Structure formats: structure tokens, C-alpha cells
Length: 85
Ligand SMILES: [Zn+2]
Image 1 (tube, rainbow, N blue to C red):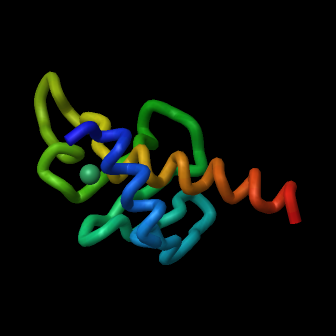
Image 2 (cartoon, rainbow, N blue to C red):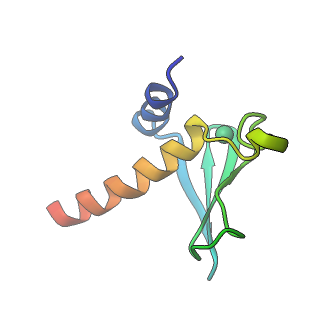
């Protein structure tokens, strides 16, 4: 399945949940996987997902997966909804 469609379905079915926030990360649960979103922008701080695809090593290290996309879109939509309140 298309990873964008999959990401959208995670959001639409309420499967993206913000679990915790620290000074350097926001932690999300997306379905049964955990995604961390780094608040500090540098090469050392990248989004990491616990799914097989998102945690690949080597050349394909830390590939983009539907869970990471779901988190990005979810956060973006929060701003849109806040603006419309
Ligand atoms: Zn993933």
C-alpha cells in the first residue's frame, strides 16, 4: 500500500497519539509502533521509528515510513486546527 495513504489512515482512525514530550523529543505512538520526533534540528537528531522499515541500517538507514509521515502530518494538522478554533 502507498505509504502516504497508510499514514493518512493512521491519522483518520485516531491511531496517532502524542505520548510524551521532553526538552529534546516528542514521543508518539502510531499503531503499534513508536516514533520519536526530535525538537533539536541536527544530523544527530533524526526521526526514529521502531518498525522494521524505519529502523533499517546501512545505506537505507532510517528510511521514511508511513508512521513517520503520519506524525509529520498529524503535527501539521494540529496547527491548522488551532488556527481555526
Ligand atoms: Zn515506521
